[in-house]
Length: 289
Image (cartoon, rainbow, N blue to C red; front, side, top):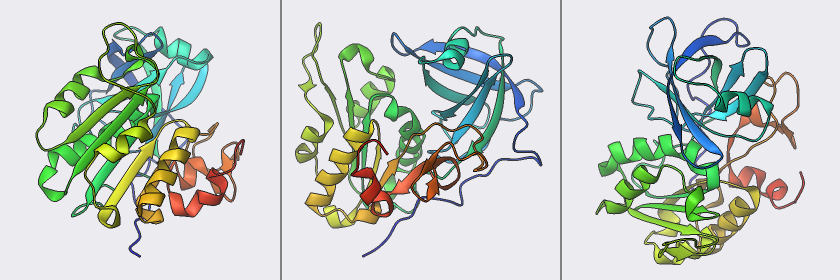
């Protein structure tokens, strides 16, 4: 069985001190939904943007408040800006939410493993996202669509709680309009004028064309969603080590020092966040780990 590993050769943090943030300035704040927003940052010193691989994350530091890990949601080919999409769920993310154009943010990174988009070339590619899980997958989608000729069928499945919770609506419209991409969106509860799919994202899998034995799957979202999506793809014959999942834990140092994000024998910040499902299957199948 062919094996795809999370890309642990991903771009590593630059500089000699991985704990020292670089200073960035907010160029744009875009509201995605009632509790989620996207920050576009540029280096305060006018230097180029950060090199990163799809799936990696940064530590964002609000001076005087604290630091949080946030996946990078922008285009890895755009070296001028750094983009993060954030849900307002705590003190630091609330402080990030209050930032305006011209505000200052400390950035450490990039950290972690990445989606193996290059290893998936020549295969069908299935990308499955739930909720804010679309944010760390968006750089992978940008890469794949800019190298579209290298892949077979490209499937994008996205589920949210309601139509009002959908992220990157403009991107979704563009992906769904492409003739060379199979993109479907579903919601748990239809509101307003929604006439699209209703139900869990795994219900969309039978609608899509893919050859299980020649497919790489990238999955990110709530653990219960990733668990059932991985099980469904496993049942259909996608090799376990070509099913990739991105885990989320309470990360504090981002370099494997503190142990806050330990997941079995691994540290999410150092060994993840992207793992082959086959490597962590026994842990992922257990709740509350």
